[in-house]
Length: 467
Image (cartoon, rainbow, N blue to C red; front, side, top):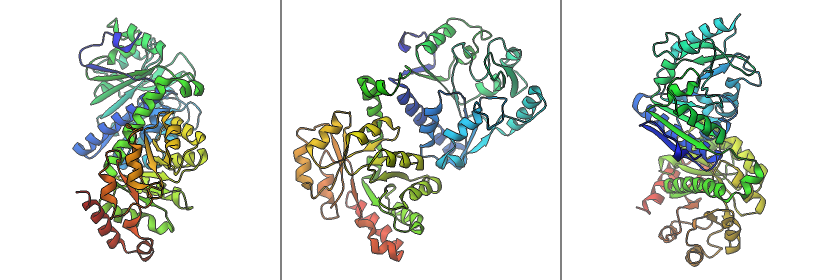
């Protein structure tokens, strides 16, 4: 069965995505956009998510989104009544995979409460939820039995939980699987969300959803209580494993299409991307501020110095309005370290088969380095269409880029190495150049002297050359 075959209610929007990773990335972008809209309108945003194993990739993608995280409040749709250090705790899952890096600044309201009984714990959770503002974004999942949150069929409190006028925000629930004792938000609180999203994976879930759509009663399949407008539904087949991800051309094309779009967005925002090697930790924030005040808000922090990863972590946490990537990534281990630090994109000086494969497996978009047609073909065969040309002037500069535009018509470049105010406009005039990288706007002596005003001026002047 395909998603297009479902008989969805009017107002329910469905999207079929090619694989789980694409679902996670798309869902993260949609959620982040809705949270930004809420913050712009009201100054804060409330996100409620579900637990389980399926949302892990989504949580990790969302954690990398650029948001004013201190203005976001996160809570759970349901929880297992187990301590937060228990392996099955939903709160532990969210803290481990979502509330990390800059996203750790978000506020969190948990449901688990220490109490003598499940009912007492639910009453305490109900009181804690009095601080929960109206939900801006609700992300639900669904079990094979048609449950959502911890609203399980045949649970003793299900009828009360599904009442439109249920007086409780949280009720104790009983799951058919261990751990059985659960806490769940009730229908009135969940249904009041401004945006509800349902994400499922695999043909079994699709069949369950089809069955849920064929009847009206929610008692046997509680997900039915949420299958009405407004609701956005996304689905994807479940991945079979790493080997399939490497060889399935459809999945490969879908993942790379998303990453290419992300690179295009980053480069369009940048136009000129400072390539920064941090010599002193105390320079991290003032240098980034000077560049940003001059208009350069997309920064490539190279891992050439021991301060590179520290700079990425601090900028993601303390300057959430910037877009921060990791440069001079040489191998799989460095890529993993950059991801952990919160890098929003990866730039490499060259290409190896192992590094290109690692880029495919990563959720973070990568701009692999190239200096020849052979390098481009190595990446092209794996789906890459965006590259860093390095060192650009040594490789032939604008003449080389013009020549490469013939055989590689769909490929675009970020030339770095030798780009300066004298040749900047010639590079940017080429149709296969999306942005450039450089260092001239923050001379090392200016940084050493703390001449931030001069750096701010040089940055603004560089951008003026493109206007």
